[in-house]
Amino acid sequence: MAVEPLKVGCIGMGWWSDVLADSMVRSGKMRIVACYTRSTQKREAFAAKYGCRAAPSYEAMLDDRNIEAIVNTTPNNVPLETTRAAAEAGKHVFLDKPIATTIADARDITAACRKAGVVLALGYQRRRENHFRWIRRQIDDGKFGKMVNAESN
Image (cartoon, rainbow, N blue to C red; front, side):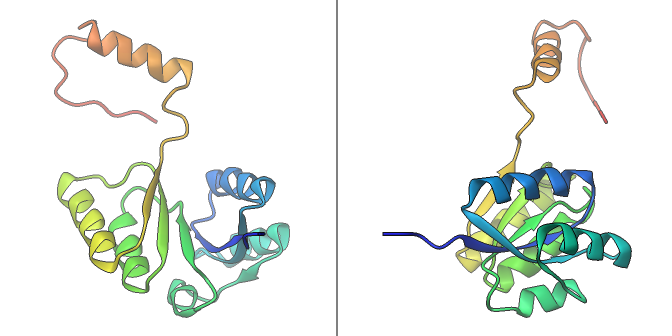
C-alpha cells in the first residue's frame, strides 16, 4: 500500500530552509506545496526551485486545507506566534531549533500543539556534530568555569 507524501508549507526562506527542502525532496515522504516569507524575491525563488506555490501570506497557507504540516525555519524570535497559528489551524509543525528563546514561550508552544492535537517536531539535526560535542565536553569538564550564560552563532 503506497502512502501519499505529507503535503507541507514552508515558512521562512533562509539558507537552512533550502537544506531542509532538499532533504524533503530526497526523502519522497513530503511534498512542498506552498511557501511564504516576507521577501517576495526569496519566496518566488524558493517556489520556482521546489515547484510549489508562493503563498501571498502565512495566513493564506494556514487557510489552505490541502496543507497538512508547516516546516518553520523562521528567526529565533518568532516561533511562538507562527507555531501557535499553525496549531490552531490544525497543521502539524516541524520547528527548527531552538523551540523558543524563553522557557515560557517553549511551554506555550508545546501547550498550543497539545491542545490542538497536532504533532510538534523539533529540528536538532546538528547537535551531534564534532564541534558541538567538543563544546559539551568542555562544559561538562568545567573548562569554562561556572556557566551562567552562553550564546553561539
